[in-house]
Amino acid sequence: MRIDRERLQPKNFPFSYEMQTRFADLDKVGHVNHVNLTAFFQEGRNRFIYACDLMTLAPCPLVVAALNVEFAGDLFHPDPIEIYTGVIEVGRSSFRVGQIACQHGRVGAYAEVVQVARGEHGSIALPDAWRPIFERKMIATK
Image 1 (cartoon, rainbow, N blue to C red):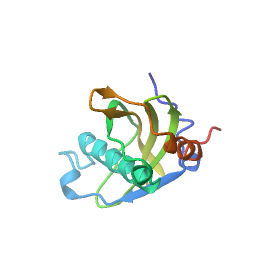
Image 2: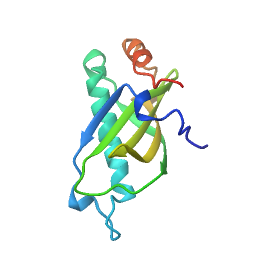
Image 3: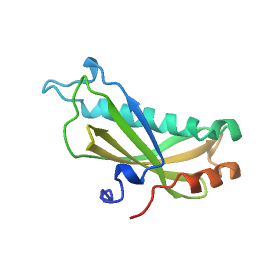
Image 4: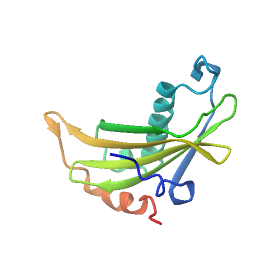
């Protein structure tokens, strides 16, 4: 399934976090390696979760159930990358997050990630305390 790139524009996101690139993030061509970019997205999601105080309100283990990344352009070192993050959809035991990685106002990659609340024997219901926060942290639609 293709990512809705029109919806995932910087102005539509409720949260962003600037991350510094490192020389170690580069590939042989000199741009940020695709594998390392997924780590940037992971850090952005982690910062988003903690900025929303989800783990303070109701600690709950989360796992990634699905990850879809579309690359749109090169990202370079030493310039920082801005990771934008917001909620697209909320289910019973999971939520879908949209993200973009930008540099100098240009989108270099898009991502959608499904995160699942996990208990001892599999998925569990998302904490009720999280739902109002997710409603406020939705990615705006056109």
